Length: 246
Image (spheres, rainbow, N blue to C red):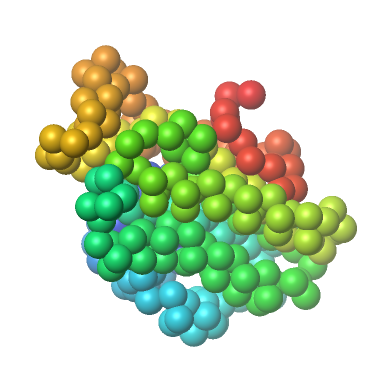
């Protein structure tokens, strides 16, 4: 049995990955701020935790609960997919309030860091495949006005993944960790970026152009690529993968 812990499964890419992973040979553990009843109804091999990742100081306790659902006697792989993300505040930095900035960094950077820490601590003794897939973004390098917090968080996630990869090394018991850019996907984050009204920014026009020109991949198609990558032989320790086609 393979166990998959996935964050941000209420919609978008996280939901698509969860649906793709539904199988009698897979046990899914989904985490999001609101429950996805369609996912719950779709599989009996699924546990759901309604949890807001802004509550970073409660994540370790959550992971202790999650691992009580994992039967280590029949597990041949345990996987963590850090997918949850928020784009707000989508504004010039001087227009952002401190609470929105903290929320952004909590969900996009601190939560994956704590989830990774707990995952490694709880699996480091297990003689099975252990992988962490951090869903990053090209925004870590392709910088646009209004996205300073989001871009900083994703760049931090990339550096974190590479550093943890160095810590874990390549021994057989190591937890493998990779940060990946999924490409331009038609998700609620893209929709929010397109529909943001801010006269000081031209960035929403860029997102509208990308949509109008049909440059966005579907969540389902992207989920297929990510899952193949997660379970495949190109999952190299500490890598930051900017193009899943390479």
